[in-house]
Length: 162
Image (cartoon, rainbow, N blue to C red; front, side, top):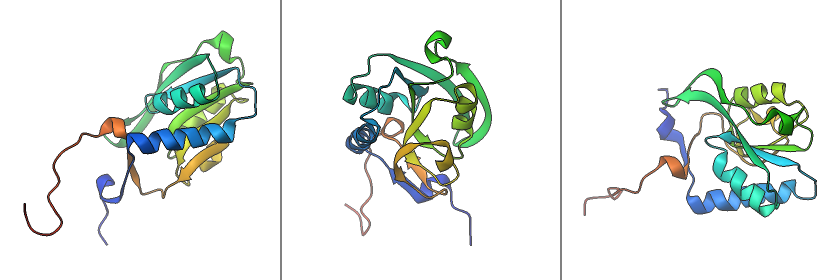
């Protein structure tokens, strides 16, 4: 058996699907009083904006954690932290990301803000223990292609040529 490249077992997410799934995440998170939303950048920016809009949360901040380099996970680096006065220990803070993969990024953020609530749109099995809420689980070996990473282009028909 040959090893697959990341794009060979791909899950393509359109802008419409991301919007629907982020709204579904907001429905799961409704009914609680959140002080703020913190997006894990960059992937968490779009779903965090949608969740904040749906739940009428006006205080939004970011934490920037770099963990990937050209589709390979590397060492974690916090490039930007949210306002410490806002965050405190994380109580009442909703941390949003697009995906939890290995869980390493969320583990780092959880160490800083142990009482924060973590939600992602998509979750892989290794990272699931790091989130309280997610919408869709995908297999660990699936590569998710997010709409902000894609461009429209011509695709050859399966059978024959044009």
